[in-house]
Image (cartoon, rainbow, N blue to C red; front, top):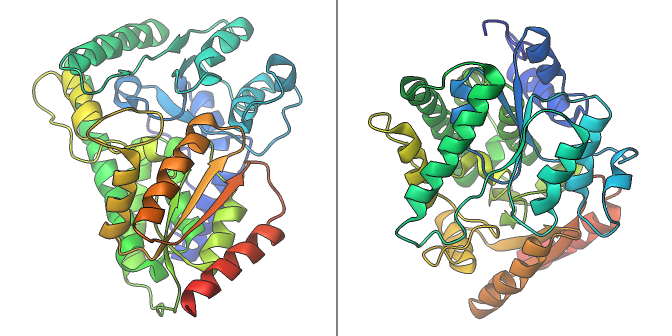
Length: 388
């Protein structure tokens, strides 16, 4: 599709580009998705954490990551029980309210609540609502073949929705686009790790997050334009604690919370929107692209509380992440009512205690609006580290 869905940043200075990205991230009306549909495009919505967007992209669809929105679940409340995380309710809310229109929805059984999401969705909408069953045992010798079959099942549904064949050549082209996108995101995170004073925490997050709402080709253009400008900034390093943020793999903290944390420390690494960065190396563009994507998910990937892999114990991976970016401390957090996130906090904090690494533990909710008390606690924690 030749029509741009996010033209606001083009031809503007860096600060205005970053402002446009922040505004889009906080806009609950999904204006870029509306523009895509108005131009005749179809939309595939997918729930956290990881989804092989290349398959939908190869069919000409716009993959949109449903990561929650800070809205009141006026319509969605009646479809869920009370003690569930906010992201489930707000994701359904924006679709029930008509702000976000989809042609297909895919969820994953990442927790007890999310495993029922596709069924609830399917009772309310007449388009395909699928569950993508990612391998529960990533260490099995059959996991790649199994996952390739799942991806091909999904591929057939995408073909039914779009009426277009999703050929191997088309998927290979999409893999190349997404390889570039992941490389650019790795460059952004390298800036965060080595020179965090060049990019504010909320701006780095927004630059990643907009990729979930626009075509990857546009996201690549945006990142190619912004990254060189970030490295050329004349910003001075400040005396701040270097911190890793852990706990943003599914529900996302409010942008104001990330902004607040960025005022008190340098967030040099995190697992925010990790699904967009799940694959950590280029996926081969020759051979069977579906098998290549399945292999990359299992063998060339990051970690999260919703994947069980004996080669990637979460606490060990966190310690490696902290060592790689020379972090002084960690912020271990989880969304309220998030069973996987809260469960992993125990493993994370035990590992940090053993290594005598300081950490701060908290919870968040996507519709939080007041951070005064949390900011005071974080500031006190950081000051104690600075003057220890």
